[in-house]
Amino acid sequence: MNSPQDLSILSLVLNASTLVQAVMVLLLCLSVASWTIIFRKGSTLRSVRRETERFERDFWSGGDLNTLLEAAHKKTIGSPVGGNASVLERIFAAGMQEFLKAKEIDAARRAMKAAYQREMDRLESSLPFLASVGSVSPYIGLFGTVWGIMHAFRGLANVQQATLASVAPGIAEALVATAIGLFAAIPAVIAYNSNSTEIDRLSIHFETFIEEFTNILQRQASRL
Image 1: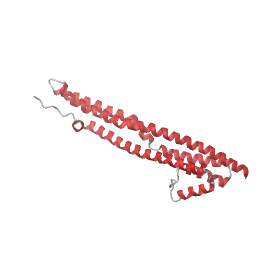
Image 2: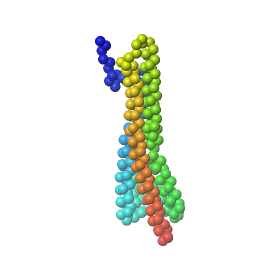
Image 3: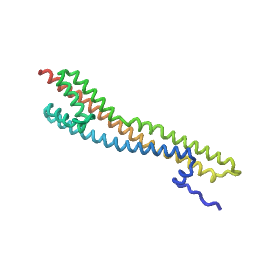
Image 4: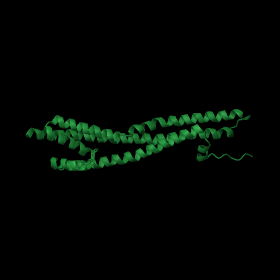
């Protein structure tokens, strides 16, 4: 009687063909990179949301604008990316500083829009990678599966009597590649959609602040 074949996941991976193993390693690397970005981006967006709410409380509490600008400058000293200043604080500082220089509303608005675009580019970094992993990983896994099945059937060419028991391990090995592809793709797609939604909310928040702050500057300019 033939001994039962080991069909555990580890055994299937170790016994897979070289190309299928290479596909699995690639997918695992993509998965690790995706999870690293997911945790890092999630932490960053939570921090941005928290800092935005803190600065808005300070801004709308009626504090002096020059005092807020001075505080923002202290946080940005020595750092080209803003130091400890929040995203909204950097947008505010860009507009306020330009207004003090030129006394023009349009110049202040352009400065805030430029700062806003820089911040959005920074927040959206790494999202294209998650989108790529989410869309490409299933196809990479499918490629490994197709190749593995072809390899399994080629192995039957020298077998006089093909049975399900003889072909099952090869097909199972190949299907593991598809499973790993889905394992890499699903979290990446979920994280991409979730982060994109959060960034869109922050974007609306920042744009609303720019419009409101522009109105405040316009009122101040009318008194000059």
